Image (tube, rainbow, N blue to C red; front, side, top):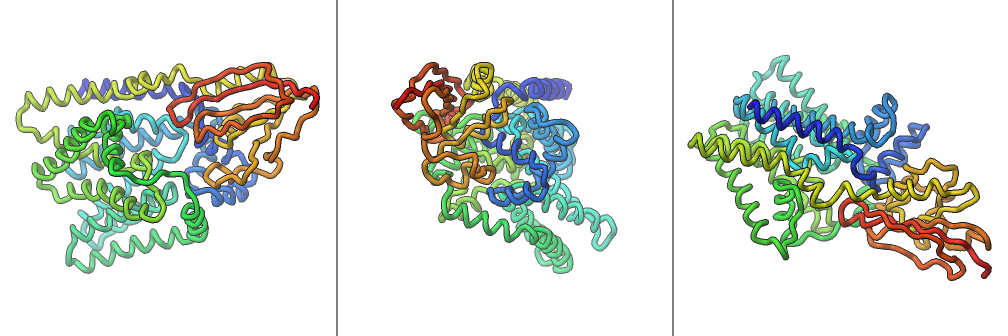
Length: 486
């Protein structure tokens, strides 16, 4: 326990010191800019033009109103709820297995695993959604154990409705968790119709609370069904997601098929070992919560793919609890101690190894690009950005009075962040400069690698590349041009 506590403290300090190691990227910049609208109604309107519900942005706006919109502050909000999720996992594990040591181990493992740490350090809604869903699960289990009718029961049900609704207003993927809660309630109560009716009332309350947002959700759904960027599911999708959830990095099936299969066998084996070694009925909710998002997303992706690894961060806690419980159930004390020590050391090293493998400290991204560009920028210069996936990132870091233009010769897809764009932000052609003008362009080799050819009259003066974190973000390329006579 002391050893695990020291590791827990180490990784939290490590995360605090690494909140700003990597440059802010497109999704985070979207968060940071969206909350800066002075008109609250305008902010909500633009949220509706995107594909996510509003609660994360509302709470982040409140947070930054107290603190600020620095990168440290934006990501600290996510880290706070990552820690809160670990606290929730402690209470939930204790509620299921009645064992404080196992509960503490589960919380420590969640805080250490690389998949969780990565999203603790990202200014998006993932840890907030996981936090609400974990506490919703805790409250629904507590309500199932409480005498009906009683004041305590209705208090726990009110807490459940609040947390489940908050989860749904944070990210739509949490609906699979709410569905899993319903399945478990049916399993746990079977034919106790009076209690089932009370829980049905709770789900009705969740639906009614979501009703004001329903028209906006339906518009967002129509956008997603028309066009979305998530690639189709493959035969390896689930297996690679589970390997990423456990060991922290996505493995290429063409190079590491055996390791992916092995990790999946161990993860699923831990689930079934846990189910066979414990007698608590509540343990089944872990399996329901683990399976529901995989089955649900597969079913919905038959029309338009919505399957994305990072969305399973909401369901990582239940896999971690199952793994911890399985290890804790090993009868041989020495074997259990060796395995626990090995896993804890591996977990505490997982994110540092992940960061080292990706060389995150050597990839300054847009922060490096703006640090290079801005000192040389003159007020009469122009800035042209050739991808919406780095446009908002530059806006966040831009401290100059020069407003950049986004070059977009064709209509932009909604998922590129069009909810934040105004007409005056966009140019459809390169006819924006005259002879003698200085033009700075910013390109990216990531996100589809759109790098248009500039007019021949633009003479290149400088070029510098700034690698960004992770392959899909590529590198930021800054170029300086002097416009010649045509």
